[in-house]
Length: 312
Length: 185
Ligand code: SF4
Image 1: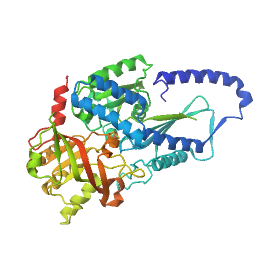
Image 2 (image 1 turned 135 degrees about the vertical axis):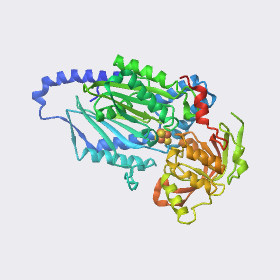
Image 3 (image 1 turned 60 degrees about the vertical axis):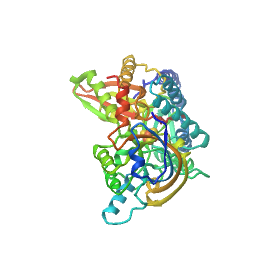
Image 4 (image 1 turned 90 degrees about the vertical axis):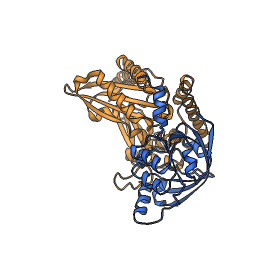
């Protein structure tokens, strides 16, 4: 799937290619000995990352709040951003979740093709990690049956996205996703004729309709191209990027800037109470699509932009 | 923005008619929690002629599903949930005397009309500031529907909970006014 959504990933891909070239020479000798990774280690990492993600606001988000506070013209907007920084401090100090909606547990896993996962069912191990992480850290369990609304009681099943990548490591990200912002996300299957202008309109319409609901300042993950399903997953995957990262695709990088400026003319502001800081960052991922299609997925992320990662 | 206005529930008509969209308020006293599932049950109970789980006259309801309390705490993180999911039920509760709703996000025209008709206000807490809000909550007790877990109805005792008046009884709407003031389109 998506291998070029940040410079770090590009570097990682390059080094993986070199590694692959080197290891290809050793291939015949080492054919029978892939690196083993115990699934219990995956479970432990997931449990730890669930806690860390929900209790500690990532540093890139904290810095974005501080920058936005200095530039925000609205006094109420400044006050809201200040309160969000204070909230993050209190959460860390008191080991209290940043937000009571501790999210559905969304897990991305990039699995090296030379890694051998042993000791049990990988997905079950992830769910075990989620179960422990949410229980041990006093996190709210928000998973329920869609019709009866009966809570599953332990925040499982997790939403797991895996992809196979070069190398022998397992890279995992825990991204708890709140309902308020997820509910404002959209997938559009546009007519190719609407072009770039139609894509921009889709993004603006999504943010405008969301207004104060998804806890602005928001972050947007926008994936253009691919198929219906692929666009949605890539849109979410862009949210793994650091807020100050630069998109290696110049076309996407430029669109990120244009969309950010456009969205911030809407005036929605922090907490939706009016201001210039509606959005902290737009991430864009562009991929080819069918000659008949122009899919666009817009994943809305609230300011509680929780993401923690580990490499095993 | 005005000075801080103190509100102590149960509220009377004059408490809410004096408020204007954009005012900042501090709520202290007893309030109740409820989300969609609890609202559904309360409205069904009222329709069947039953008693609601707490007195609605003058009441303040907080749309929240808190996280579990860590050891030694009365409650976990407790920020507002998105209010539109309660829109279908809110007018019925206002007709029974509910005076203020605490949440985040837009309300529909029917709810705004009911606020004018029954004299009630909609107050916004800062969404996602759950750890900060928890500091204002001094006591918490589940009083109904414990099987709903985070969605159970709780009685909270709060002290100086900071909120913004979003919708007043006069048709004012802070979300619209705030946006208009800063929109550049
Ligand atoms: S949208 Fe995000 S910040 Fe707002 S309540 Fe939901 S999880 Fe928390």
